[in-house]
Image (cartoon, rainbow, N blue to C red; front, side):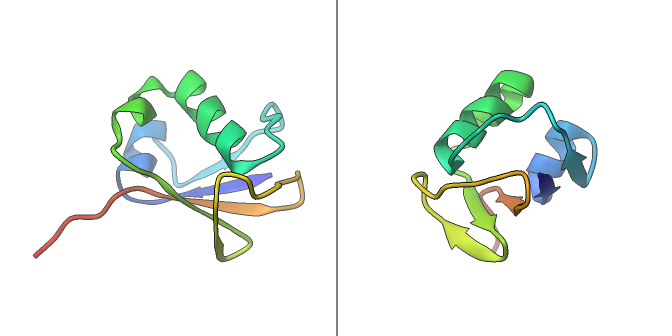
Length: 78
């Protein structure tokens, strides 16, 4: 599974991409939990949007090793 990281998520991980075969998540909610376990700073984010194959996905969305996942943290601006 290829994970693309944006904004502060990229800063937390220290890279723009994660290609990690150790992720065992079956859905978006499980992936979020795995990210928090591997990178505890994710727990400090108030929300986290996830896209699966370029479409926003809810926590129940099933994922597999073939998917491209985008992690999109909250954005502020003015």
